[in-house]
Structures are given as C-alpha cells and as structure tokens.
Length: 111
Image (tube, rainbow, N blue to C red; front, side):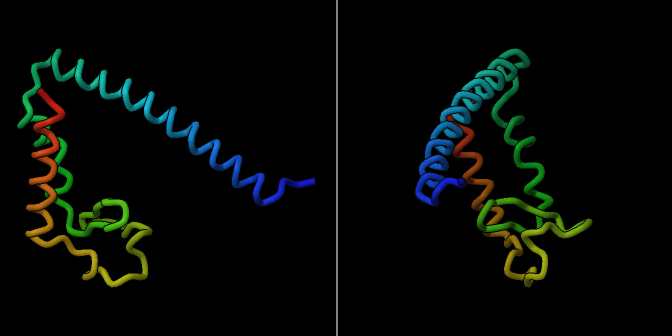
C-alpha cells in the first residue's frame, strides 16, 4: 500500500530539514576552504570580485527568479524558451545594482 498524502508531506518536510542541515555543513566546509585558499595565495578582495563578477558583465539576460544569466550567445536556456526576451534584458541600471550589491557583500566576506 502506498503512503498517504499527509505521510508523504511529512516525509518531505523531514527530508527538507535534513537537506538544509547537510547544505549548511557543506557550505561551512566550502567557505573554510575558500578562506584558506584566499589566505594561502594572498588574494585581494578586488581580485576575487573581478573573477566573481566577470560572467555577469557579459550577461545580456537575467532570470528574475533564480538570478541565472545568459549572454545571448548559443542555445537559449530553458527559462527563456518561448518567452519574450525583452522582458529579461539586463539594463545598465540592473547591472550597476548587481555590481554594487556584489561589491558590498564582498566587503564583509573576504578580508
């Protein structure tokens, strides 16, 4: 016999909690590794921000739900398929806001 909807939803809730705990643990490990590498190589905040924002400078379209970007070259991503691309265009103001947000976030994360 299959599980009832309420049982499945309860299991999903438990799994989501376990996933979040595992994600946080792995995130902590990853951030520790990043900090170690930044320290080891003497990477400066500006260098790191340049690398992290390089992709978005070439981006022409942004998915407002996920923040995923696309340059407009190559095959269109699924989130843009059969939609009016003009609605997803990144304006100069959008790009400047994203760069400013990235820069201010980076100031608190990297020594």
